[in-house]
Image 1: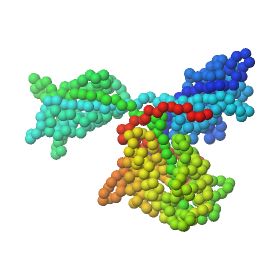
Image 2 (image 1 turned 45 degrees about the horizontal axis):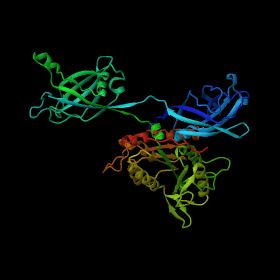
Image 3 (image 1 turned 90 degrees about the horizontal axis):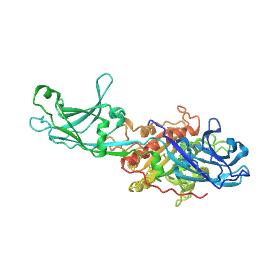
Image 4 (image 1 turned 135 degrees about the horizontal axis):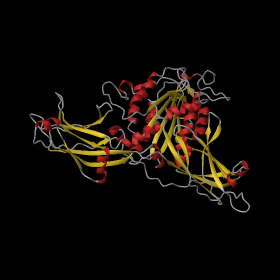
Amino acid sequence: MATSMCVSHLYLRLSCTDLRDADITSKSDPVVVVTQYDRFEDKYTEVGRTEIVRNTLNPSFVKPVRINYHFEEVQKVLFRVYDADDGEIDELSTLGSAETTLGTIVGSIVTTLPLVQNDNKKRGTITIVAEETSEIQEEYYFTFTGRNLDKKDFLGKSDPYLLFECPLPNGEYRTTYKTKHIVNTLDPDWSEICLSFENLCGAREDQEIRVSCYDYDDDSADDLIGMFTTTWKEMMKARRGLKISWECISPKKKMKKKNYINSGRIFLRKLRVEKIHSFMDYLYGGCQIHFTVGIDFTGSNGDPREPSSLHFIDPSKPNDYMRALVAVGNVCEQYDSDKLIPAFGFGAKVPPNNEVSHEFPVNFNSTNPYCSGIAGVAAAYQTAIQTVTLWGPTNVAPIINHVAKFAKDAGQSEMANHYYVLLLITDGEISDMDETIQAIIEASYFPMSIIIVGVGSANFSNMKDLDRGGSYGMLYSSESSKRFAERDIVQFVPFSHPDRQFASAEDLAKEVLAEIPDQVVGYYRGKKLRPMRRVATQPPV
């Protein structure tokens, strides 16, 4: 599917404790310079600095540092504290430094790190608090009713609905919203509707909005009951609890009848405003991103002892499985509090019985398939590739179902606290396509996303169908039942295919992870679950 990078603007608010005193007659005058690693330039570049706080070893800085945050990247940041005598700083005035990633800061709310001095001794701490700076976005829910509308149907009353329109520069009108019609009534109570400030009136509060009330006809053109004009500013009065109404005027009747008053009234009975929560809001609320890895050990990868194999272990450089694993995993593990990552293989004959398994722990510990971070997964993979016998077929439904069981349990909760991401790395077409489609459809109802990375030069056409959803735009199980997925949860990217080359593994990670924030927010919004209220805790130094 099309990607849209998740970019948030953060304010980093900083404070320090127990700094080294670099002055003789007074205390230090600390300032923090924040730099970010640029992998293209292979150096750290300054993104901002605090003000100088005079004569203190425990500064709390007022000026925040603004920085762009990308979920799909590992963004290294370096905090260097200086004693700024006379406003000047240099290496000799360094009081200490600390390095971490933005992902770690975002996942922790409050991050306290030890400051390392030039002699590698630790003295003092720096505390970082991240706040999202994007403007608060809101959704507006309106409840409209109509009373004493004109009767338009010969054998009944009317089937009224509302049509909202905004004028164009050429004098024409564009439709911005249409309610559902209500059958056979002159006093309709329409269901609550969500109207966008941007779409309804171009985000201009004084822009004219034309609202027309029509009688729906299924066998002829709809009949106009009446219309009125309003503005966003006027409708916002209902936010203060005011009851607003408009006369519904029929232009034809008004011209023909001298005693014409109106064709009924339209009332705005209620206006409800809700904040649109962002991905950052859910992370700040304590939502944990649980990461699971699935690795293809089928025979189509080639004999791992041969250099032509996709699983060949070359001491001088990692193979594509390792590159994809590390690039994507390094991003995801930042949001996993315990850094314990379950990893499974599929498609190999596994000791001691030498039977084919499509869901075996890569560390061969069936009671504890968790590895210590991505480094632990990589080490277990390198051991496993020398232990198992590559076989087949390429069945991925078992691993999807395995993770979906945990996601299903999390989905029973009324809290937005656990979301699951499954990374599948494979070299070819899926053998159990029908079962995989069914597994993905089931998983789409749970807090879960699936990333599929294709390595090698095989034909990945059915993988693309899992991502794009086929001809219907959304994955469905079969032509007969057409049970559709609840939402799009699959992102497929070929890593080393001749038709698609990435400049680096980091670029791969950016693309495959770009949809995760929207998928997380989309799931919880669909369930009407707000971010939790999280109490910040100080992690141990």
